[in-house]
Image (cartoon, rainbow, N blue to C red; front, side, top):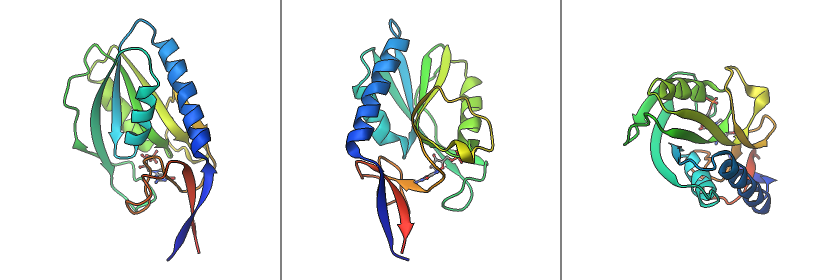
Length: 174
Ligand code: 5GP
């Protein structure tokens, strides 16, 4: 099946929003250090751009999880594929995700991280699809709320493609 991409949020819109988010986060964390946790692979593009816009000291770590299920739906069963390199105990942790959909992945992940005793734990996502929420997740920073559509770009893939698009697009099938 052939697909094409319809622009939902342009490169300019995404860049401007990330700049705003960086400014807000810098204000909120004034005088502190942020330990950013990127959820691979989707969160990587967003985290790099966001980190560049944050003016307080930042350290970074990466985690990779996979959710069992079909390609476009998460099942709620989450497996840690790559764990963090460093302990988060006593740190001000900011989890950076690409998108919150049903909320199952993040709900599991945040619980697991909370058990590791960070000083604080907050969640930042570039995109949120609130209409799709099945499990409640407390999102502290949201780039854009978007409608229920399958999106790609800025780290998000379809069949491992399109992660490198500098904008957010909706996949449409011909
Ligand atoms: P949740 O557990 O919130 O349902 O799913 C979160 C994960 O599902 C995201 O990290 C992402 O990998 C994937 N996902 C959810 N919606 C989309 C979407 O619209 N596009 C893409 N590419 N992935 C999505």
